[in-house]
Amino acid sequence: GSLHAEPGGRAEARALAERADRAGAERWHGALALGFYPDDHGGCLAVRRGGGLERIRARTYIVATGSHDQNALFADNDRPGVIAARAAGRLLHRHGVRPGERLAILHDGGRAAPFATRLFESLTSAGVPASLVAPPRTIGRVRGLRELSGLGLDDGTRVPCDTLAVAQTPAPASELARQMGAEVTLDAAGGGFRVVTAADQRMSPRGFACGDVCGYRGPDTAAEDGARAGIAAAEAS
Image 1: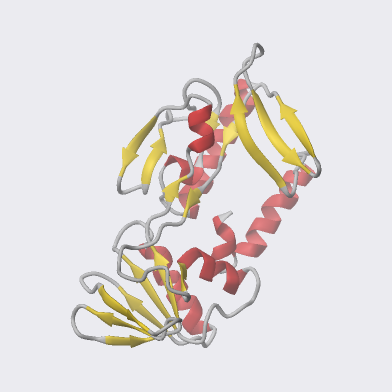
Image 2 (image 1 turned 45 degrees about the vertical axis):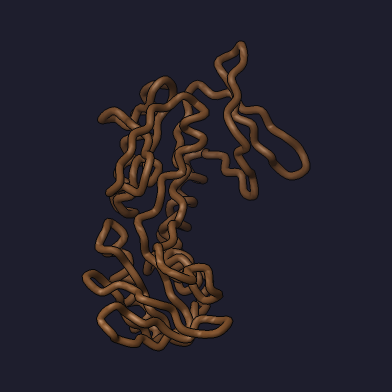
């Protein structure tokens, strides 16, 4: 999923999907996993698909639910023009849309910092004026009456922009895994409560988990997790 926010990621994601199709995988588009519910047969996954509800029981499950973007803490952080950095990346790389006329990109020095740098380089390469706001500089205030027109930093610098892309470490989307009984632990560097897995990505008590749901470490590490989970799941089945 996060490939769509990366340079060249759309083509890579398409190639991976085509490989899955050639391998005989069945992919459902526009389907929503509502939750995992215990029953006398070990539990089922409820999925809304089209106008109906599917109940899925599998020999094994791989939870790859990704992560939730998080906003930074500063006054007026909900003003129009403040968006997630990955949303800016998707607009640019997946849809070919300029996310703004002049952008500022904010990161806190955490694990999302490399993505913030890649986004900055992509924007400037596309001819979009951009500024990178990184520690120790922080936002003192946002400027603009209704919509964003700039930032005032704590060192007195003013940054003109109509869009602020926030690159905080995303929070693991562990809700479904927790419904399945998975153990989670607080990992502040990884974005929040991540799923605990063994070396082969197995989670307790059933199935496997991979990617950002195990703590955000970027798309390359997520792909490595996925490969391990796929091999282990195939062997377990």
